[in-house]
Length: 271
Ligand SMILES: NC(=O)c1ccc[n+]([C@@H]2O[C@H](COP(=O)([O-])OP(=O)(O)OC[C@H]3O[C@@H](n4cnc5c(N)ncnc54)[C@H](OP(=O)(O)O)[C@@H]3O)[C@@H](O)[C@H]2O)c1
Image (tube, rainbow, N blue to C red):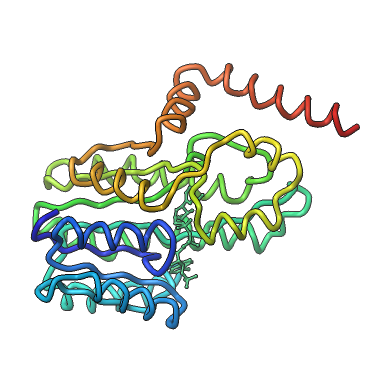
């Protein structure tokens, strides 16, 4: 991380903000964050600046990652501001959870526009730079729910699964260029996004999620940056989370049986 220039989307809050702080602590030459809300972004930038050494660059750009033209304009500004880029972290995201029949077409589109297309547009905007540089790292924050479905998360899950498919191809494309690719699959993390999800979670989802532990954004940030630095491809922060995703990959029938069982027990208790 020492001497590296890092750009993190969704850096004004939660995991993104914690990753920005951790990158500065690890000696990054510069950290740039982005988000839509200019006020919260400026607060985060000022806090990061206070944490930084005098020679570390800290910058911020307000941009909506679902707007491709705005993302392209921001990329030019960020490359100039940092004097290049070594690490791109696609972290910006939103979540929505509700019963399947309550998910509106707009919610399905919003999840795809931000979580999936936001990641695609940002990655494509920096791709020529990384190809030319023939070095660096590109990462995306997916979710545990980017590998397995969970009651209530139909729109969110689909958008996070899509990120995995896109990055499978990006990774192959970048093999000859020496640019590493990392996809992160965090479980529940104590952030404003999770607080927002908790407002609309169906009782079934609460019953299922209630058995999972809550990670600190700082811990997820530290594991994530180490994974990106080392060029690991698929990383699930947290031991329990990693075990669940491993089981889901090796024995998907068993994880389905376990989740279905929890759901059926919930419905029986509440019949
Ligand atoms: N928290 C969890 O339990 C959890 C678990 C697994 C995966 N994740 C993923 O981790 C990532 C970070 O989530 P978090 O929990 O840290 O959420 P958070 O605290 O709500 O932060 C989300 C960040 O993304 C920005 N953002 C949202 N929509 C954007 C857009 N259209 N354009 C640009 N920036 C946008 C937000 O700022 P503005 O709203 O101002 O734009 C904010 O800076 C997300 O991709 C999320 O899906 C979270």
